[in-house]
Length: 426
Ligand SMILES: Cc1cc2nc3c(=O)[nH]c(=O)nc-3n(C[C@H](O)[C@H](O)[C@H](O)COP(=O)(O)O)c2cc1C
Image (cartoon, rainbow, N blue to C red; front, side, top):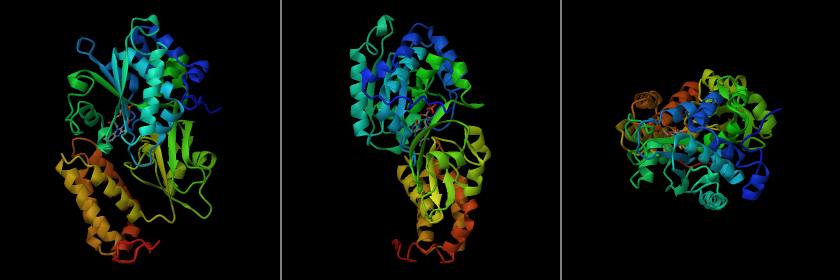
């Protein structure tokens, strides 16, 4: 039986959530020592669901014990990566599960103030979360002396202004502080010098919403779900020419082929699988053959040559032009670069310009190698991984679909656009 944790109940209403057993894990956590709560999360092998897959309990334990400054928990609800729309679904369907997770995590790290940094475009979700925070406060699950435990917690919902870079954790902290969202140089890491110069833990929505079940049923129980080092369940958002695009919760380790057939409903009639971007648009693309052999867990996707990332699966079919697709991505990452690092600021612009030429049938053979070498020179040479987020798709698209790029350079494009017009014929 496939276990469900995150989308088990769909209760935006607090009464329904409580009736389904909600807020009992918080009660249990508050009766435990805070370090035991962290130990349970460590035992669970829960890994961050924001993209990097960093062990959550370990991250919490980096908060220096001797530091007497205030501590903060920040929930990353910025979710702006193309192809990723799972946190939004979780917030809409199960907002109190997130709030309960925030309360437990705050207690574990000793934070009395928590921020939810939410993507600017998520107006409905912002309103819903603010209402839910008020409801939870009225019933004594937030505020002062929560459930008579002596623990106080305030949650603020902070709405961003629509910048992708503000999902990067240190740019996010700058933004909450009222400054422009520019990533910080690390170290120091946020666990030591974070929000307002104080120790801070930043976790993704889905990561934090996984915590109540771990406290309720135990870290051992959670660690046995999924596949080895990829423990637990995970949300995958799937988009593209499939019959049932959407958000699905599965145990990690499911074969991608099964996910595509049983959950996403298979390819649309007349569409043939050509490529898969498995973890949000910033990870390397896989060919259909590579994707159909892999399982959906951190290790398997890495073995297949990509990354599980945020779990935003983008499906491409035989009608997709890889040059055009890469141009769309390049345009996005170039536009969203904060401009601090030269390789990302300039490289993104060059790549977009050259791809635009290629796609319009005005490119030449040497452009392909040039685009590749610009990407190579961006990789791992920037303050934050936004530069890599463009470099990795560029290098993998060119490596795996080179004949399509060559055909465009030779003026025999995919026929989607009239050569030289830059306008779609479809
Ligand atoms: C450009 C960029 C954008 C990011 N956007 C998000 C985002 O929208 N949501 C998110 O949770 N993490 C995002 N991340 C990752 C965060 O920096 C951070 O690793 C994450 O929030 C940590 O949470 P986790 O340990 O629970 O995964 C982004 C990273 C980069 C470099």
